[in-house]
Length: 194
Image 1 (cartoon, rainbow, N blue to C red):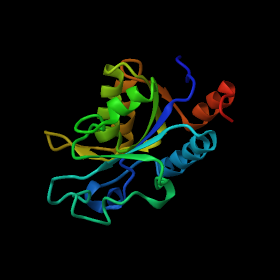
Image 2: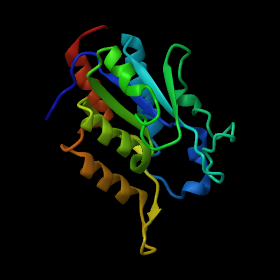
Image 3: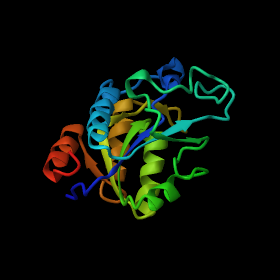
Image 4: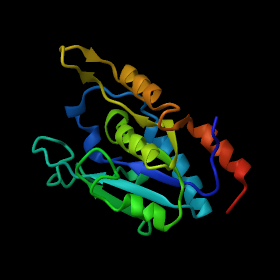
């Protein structure tokens, strides 16, 4: 299994109030935001790069529609600090239509740790692109959450199953999958910028 390398960037994807809307259906992992907050605390303590994405949907009925001022706000538990970078987007990848890739390359950041909402949307798409762009990519499975989906046959799949299969599809091919406690333990082993 790959391990973290020096000073990875923490990506916090779309942790916005609009995801609390019943529009999305059932969700798994109620602890995701608390786990992201634990990681944020560690990154901020060390002065490492924290990067946010904010989804501004163009879909009129989406709780994340760019005109829904409350829906697009970040959740209080993981709200960015003034010095932390926020890339706004209206598609599922934090790399499309933003300066994320050039920002990482300009800062000579080669490793990213991905968290956020939701597993089957921005998290999966951004993780795939991160891996394809050559970044050493780590996905924190308990610092993200999925929502139930109904497929083309009208069958509803539980958020637990959606999460499990999305993570399985990303494993090895696009990212190293870790849990919050594993990330924190690996950071202690790095022993840099404390």
